[in-house]
Image (tube, rainbow, N blue to C red; front, side, top):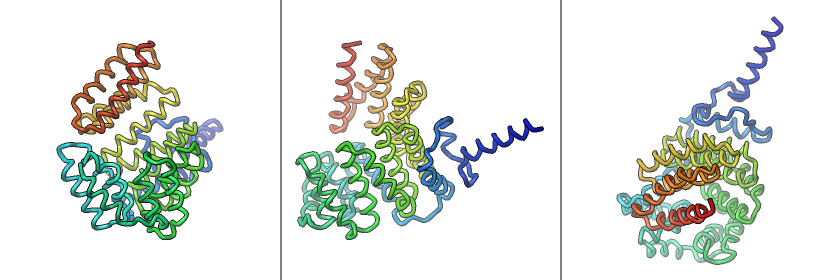
Length: 346
């Protein structure tokens, strides 16, 4: 009897770890194997809050569709068949809400492929005063990657965040974190995003919460905190699935796969990247299909399997040669060239 009682206690403890303090099921169990991957004590409240949100997907959030729409446009701009209509939608959204940081950023990032630099320049010209928070964001976004120190305007805008609405603040926090990470401060980036994660859930629902966990997972991965990085990526995946956003699911799956590679769990990572390749190829997500093929080649190279490296190399080449997106072609060609250089030394 005593042995049975001990077994029951152990089983109860495992159930509490699996289900969280509230006793509800963890939807990630059907997606990612998290057995033996503990949640650090200082993250448990954040994880439980997201699991609560996943259990109540009808909860109202004022910016609930903002990030989903942002990635809908990303997806459709990447597809030549839907690009023109997506561009029209993007600039229509901006005209309705001209200081929305999501539309400003997407216009800055995608104007060349859309062939709409004149429309983008109208956005840039609306607030030349960089002493305001919105003006600082505009300048940072305009010159990011082109002028040294341009990212400092994100920091200046952050210091004036009292001028911003909640959606602007939530988005700007991710850009300040990006700047911190680029400067080698992944821990600072994670700390900032964790501070704003509750507001992301309350105001942005599943889409914003999933986006936040996705970015957090990247910086945790960069700092080597792989247990929590895997939990973060799996939470992003669960949010995307519950939100019904297939494109964001592929982003999250690939984040999970990258972290598994860092953990040297090569077989499950290969399964994820192979499936992501098939799903992304079928859906026309050129970037994610190319990424997945490249990641598979990298894993097989680590394992010393030259034939498999070449097979995935050919997949990536096929994507490069058939893509009608010049941005993706440049990006994926770099991947293929890297694999080719490494093959010479196998």
